[in-house]
Length: 597
Figure 1 (cartoon, rainbow, N blue to C red):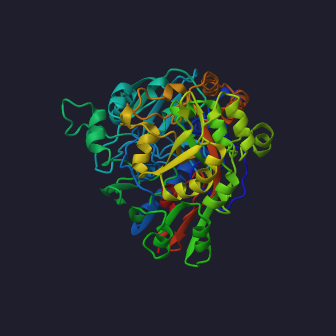
Figure 2: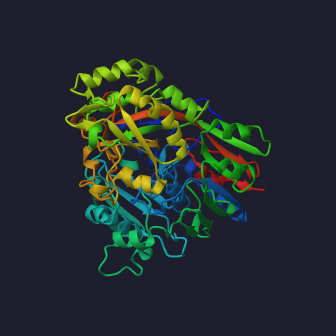
Figure 3: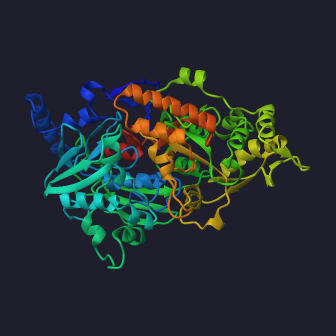
């Protein structure tokens, strides 16, 4: 992998701002050469010296006695601290601390480093790949322990993969897993060695298969009722009580209030040999209305991912606080459920896209720390840039003439109330927001202007955990389905593999059966074709061409309205030392390198 984009920024966080492109030498798989560099075979003298230095560094770090405590303010948790049952960003931060994850909150045999490269995780000694790229053999380091003192070995790896390979059992337990699509089988070779056979090579093999958290078999099977699958047992009894091998262990979780963690004495350090130096961590649920007050009064030490100008400026004006800032690798959006109600029609989605002035929205919602975007993409990826976007994408903005043209030409007519209707179906749209700040700004824009365009918007605010159930279509009956649009924000991964979030195979049917990772429930043959082309791409040119065509398709079909991107700021008390975050390196990862006064 190599860096393609150099960005002007102070510090950077939350997933890839430095997006990575895969080398094309000798047809290597994405990121493969980064991992292969760490194999035992063929090590030269320089590698031996590096290992000796690493060992000395680890010994020095082991002498540092962890001390102090910090409190981080975040949004509310779902309590789903085991991978496979949800994608709440705040839950992911807990997973990072418990399992030592980076970026998306996962850390298994492989992990993503600060630069977005996929490397061997600290629990892995080596990895070998067969000439055809289909067999991957991993060797664990000896004497690994989970935080409760139980051994971590090949049995746990095989158990974990077999758990997620059982897609039917995962779905029945309210979760989801794509592993069976990629992995043919997993086999124990010996107590420290596991062999994987994948079905076919694809562009994101490493990130899709080998970065998942490794579950403790003993933890998962202990007290499991005979009449329950292990997946159901995890969901019912263990999902909020994870046991991991990361820097911290979970001490207490109080729903909607806080998660309390303390140092994991069995942690061997991260992939660079670093061990955390802060003893205790509390992750506290704080409201958007009071979070900055909590920071400035000392109730919390870190307020990550801040976007509101008044909060950022308050910290900049106070010498007792510092900040890191970085361009967001993601976007805020209004997602349609494209299989439900009037928004199943493309002309309706496009018309709605022409009702909102996104400049006004950005200024009202974020102020000066905001940027524009025209699709579910990131120009931090190497595949596109701002110049390409400006030349190839529709820039949707408030335009009544466009609304009238789109709807009238497709058989919609205005009723006596001024609202468009067709075949007895009115354009009365139910929009769900997770926060009052979202609702207030949307009312200022869509709410006031919508009816002038002949479209009525009803905006509702629900608690975030309930919001996500409607958004994913999770554990809800068909008669509970009500909402057509959802206001939310998304952070993208280091390597783009849109299959999981956009392919029609990822729509969970029937509604409410389980989480639909294709959250817009978007069905389109060309979309599916392009996503599969990207997955099977043999080189960067093929991948880039398909990605660009996909972005253009999304910009035309509009399953999601992009509203903004951010200049993210992590605000923190100056008593934190060496706290450095980036787009690939969030606060949970940064804590490993941080101390407190």
